[in-house]
Structures are given as structure tokens and as C-alpha cells.
Length: 418
Ligand SMILES: *Cc1c(COP(=O)(O)O)cnc(C)c1O
Image 1 (cartoon, rainbow, N blue to C red):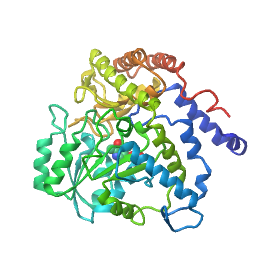
Image 2: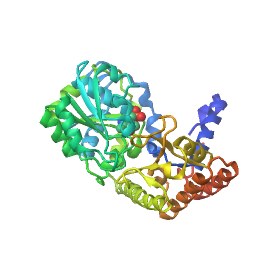
Image 3: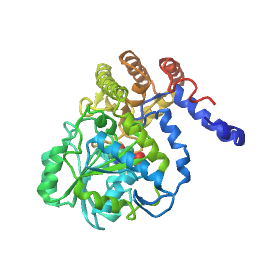
Image 4: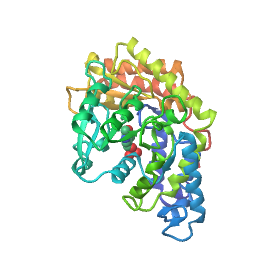
């Protein structure tokens, strides 16, 4: 796969193989990660990268676009069929840019937006103080009920009636339960706001038809195409037919430049693959493993935010174990298990330290790990939590972690070798 770089730049080749080795031998449990099929890598590195293209099929700014027109049309058709949507724009480069283009399509500077708070599960691009969107628009944020960890729809409705946003945004990076999209759409309608859901994390589960889709209920649905969709590092936005023109204009010329035909081709492949039984079985395995892991974690004395998980991610409140999220992330990384530290609702620790970790089940399901392996992983996590600073303990856990994945290769033989 890397024969030219191996020849011309051995240093970069070695680095890439080092990363391949890390991915192969670690237990990957970062909730935003997944492993792309080889076809996605083929397309993401293909000749489509040579073509500069702006505009839309049939209305391009550059010559030589006939073939690319067919690609974008095919990808759009597949995306709309897969997600049962009226319209899609797959030009956004990432989940973050997918959100920006929706804002660019329907908002003016200073407009009010109501979105989920970052420290309660939201995303930076939903108007966090640290993100430049907070300077463009007037964001207010809603949160979860501290007792249950669940979105408090009653409080949200009251807030929407008082704040009168132009856009109501739902969707999260670390919310382990289902979101009531119908309710979100209804609240927005009642206050005269546009409704939008960012399904970046759960798009694969939605595509597989295993959890409810936001698409029937809201005006705009943005997403990243990595995460559970297991596709290229890119984004997309769906909308109702009546907003198709607004959205396309907001993307180009509104906010983006030439599209990335490489990731568009990769997404095109994934939109077909995601309709297959093979993909559905993997997504079902993600959910089965996630529920099973919740039970195992609780049996080992771990507290879970929201009590359980209905999707691919679990948020663990580590306070009962006397360790912080940062400590646990570092210790687990040394022990061959990759997770991210995570703020829990009303976290007493700073965002850099945190009281929790977020665990994702996508990559391990893709590798074919099932209940027996998940059970062993929870035992390892518990061993790390019991003695997170003890290097000998971590080294022993790492050996066992590598043993769990050794018979479950990341890729079929021949994909990573050259
Ligand atoms: C990950 C995520 C994004 C950002 O996606 P990128 O592709 O990393 O830019 C946006 N929104 C939510 C809710 C996310 O979880």
C-alpha cells in the first residue's frame, strides 16, 4: 500500500508503519473512532484528488467535470436512499464544517441559537465559548437533569420559549442515551425556530436502522462520516426538500471552496456498504457489546452516567474509584487500551482533568470482539483503576490487552503490508 513512500521517504514510511502497529496492538475504545474498510482507504488516496471542482452537478465552475458530476450524483442518491432523506449535501469536509454550513445557510450574525452545553455532552462547534461560532451567533445552552443525566425536555422547552432561538440544535458527543428527536422538532416548531440535529456519533447506528433517525423530525441533520459510520474523515448535511436551495447555497459559494472528491468517493462507497447485512451485523454487535459492557462495568463497581447506554458509547463516572479521567486515560493508554477522559454532568474537576472516561465500542466490534473479550477488557480496566500509577501493573495489563486482540486483526492479511 505504501510502496512509493517507502522508496522516497523512509522516515515517513516508518512513522506510518509505527502507527499501523499501534492501531493493530491496542484496544481502541475512543468513541469517535472506527476502522475504515480498505475500500475507503483506496478511494481516499485515489486520483480523484487531482480534480479541482466547485459548484454542483450540471452547474460547475471548472471544465472536465462530467465524470465527477456522475460521482457526486451517485453519492447523493445513495446517501438519500440510505437515510431516507429528501436532500443531502456531501461537500462538507468534516462534522464541524457540516455544522458551520448549516449556520451559514440559515443564520445571520447575532442570531440566537439554543444548543446542548459542551460539558453536558454537546460539541465545541455548538457554540462553546472556546469556539469562534460563539462570537458570530448568540448561543444559549441547555443541559441534563443532574439527578438522572438525561436531557430535561421540560426545562428545554421553557428555555426555548423564553429565549426564542432562530435555531434549536440537538445532538451530542457524549450522550449515551437516545434523544427524542420528535420532541426537539416540535419544540422548535412551537417557538418558530429551525430545528437541527447533529448525529455525528450515531450516524452508523441510524443508517443500520437500529436506533431512531432524526431525519423525519427536523429541518437539518448534520453529521461527520467517521465515527460509527466507519467512513472517510468528512461530513454531510441532510435537509428537508424546502431547504435544499438554501443549504446548497450556504455550502457553496456560502462557506466552502473546492470539494474533496477523494473523501466524496469514499463516502459514496460507504453509503452502499452501510445498507449491507454485513454492516448491519457489525452495528448490532456494537450495541450488544455496549449493553453487555455496561452490566460488566456496574458489576465491578463502576458508576455509569445515565445508568446505561443505548448506543455505542458509555460514560463512566470514576469518582467511586477515586481516580480522575486524566489519570485513567493516561494509565489505560500505557496499558494498551485507548479511551478519552470525559467531563461528567456538573463535573467538579476541570475540563483538563475530569471525573470520567468515555468508552466507545465501534472499533472492537469491527474486529469481531464479543462478550467474552468485553468481559476480559472490563477486568483489565478494573485492574488499571485499582492501581493506576503502578508501572508494573500497567505493563502486566498491557500484555493481557495485546493477547485479547491478537487473534482479531484490524485488517485482513495483505492490506497493511506492501
Ligand atoms: C465529532 C463531532 C463533531 C465533529 O466532527 P469532526 O468530523 O471531528 O469535525 C461534530 N459534532 C458532534 C456532536 C461530534 O461528536
